[in-house]
Image (cartoon, rainbow, N blue to C red; front, side):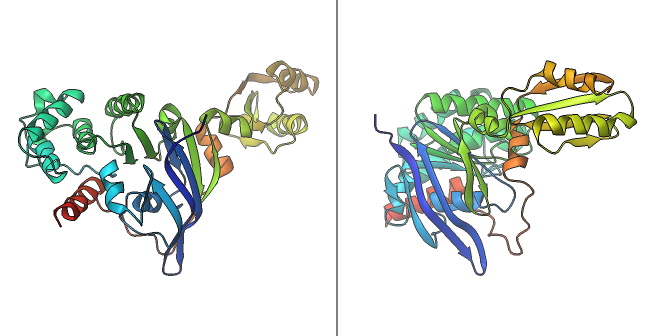
Length: 339
């Protein structure tokens, strides 16, 4: 069975003067899936999104979105995508309904279709009751749902979400997650950039870890976790036992343990699939080390991130901040259609 890719890039590069934001980024996102694009600040995630949404041109390489070349057919790309930036693009002085009608007109809808599409989106996102209130009176979660709805006015084949839940409380974040899952089930391809690794773990079918402008690792959340093995942690009865426990775990795993004198714990990542908790406890007991607690669990995505990508780079001259993608891409496409 042949896989059709909604987003495909090969050797994507972008330079800002002497600063290289992308250094040959390869992406392959199958249709109807959620792809999490993760990486440290300055790794190139936002630059990649800007290129894929036609807001900036690559220095080298090639990218296709919904089958269209981002440099050869930018108008066709814009007609096929929706995009929501890190901050809500809605107008606080307009009501929710007025905001969506504005975006519908910018997208080229006319007449009754404008109101019909706005009403449909308000219903889909549970915003109908607040539709006639100005958006500045809405909660942060409601505004983000409205922003997400605005990115879907044109029923895009591919939706770009750049840090969609920044600054939201857990309840509002869960609302956005539910909306994204529903979109994926309905066949929309979603490219998600986020610093919340739990968000990527919950939503993404596949993850691309970006570091220094390249794909450092790719795979499902489970596959990436399996690459760094299980995490063992033991609590000891007194600071004097920390070094001995670390030596035992080092011998068992061949990895460098981490000591926490305040918590009286020693932790280590174990790649050996045959390592079990009873084996750890027996080895510690044989060494005469008193243990108050012990655990062996799969790694979190945070631990995967730190192990495979590490500390964030500190670019001298970071790429320009992205414009509000929803409004910019839609307005540009509208101007080209009018011209």
